[in-house]
Image 1 (cartoon, rainbow, N blue to C red):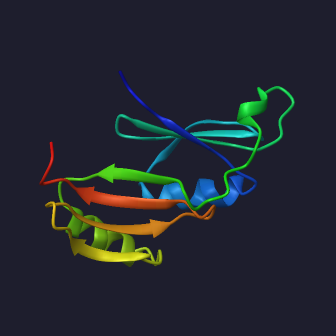
Image 2: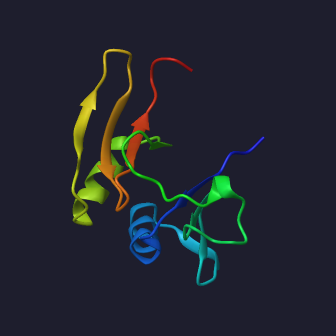
Amino acid sequence: MKIWSGIITDKLATSREFYLKLLDAEVLFESEWFVLLTSGDNQLGLMLPNLDNQAPMFRAPVKGPGVWLAIDVDDVDAHYRRVKSLGIPIALDIRDEPWGDRHFAVTDPNGIGVDFVRHQGVE
């Protein structure tokens, strides 16, 4: 099984540029209403809201808080330095959690938390 996510957003172009830079991603497919990004084996879709050709459950734009994306990385400190060097504001500074994870987070243009994490506790 493979899971990939999508974000329904009014900020298609801004989100596209943000995730291209943040994830060092590439555009796999693009149209005026949908963008599919790829980074390694991972994919992220970005879609405009309120499209008549989409089922009602895929029409409302994301409202931000209450949604997060977690990105597992081997060297979270290197990713932290890279993201800071890109000028992307850090929303949660890098830290170690009592359960063993080390992580930091940024906020995307839609208000979604993007958490870069190195899991060390629960596998």
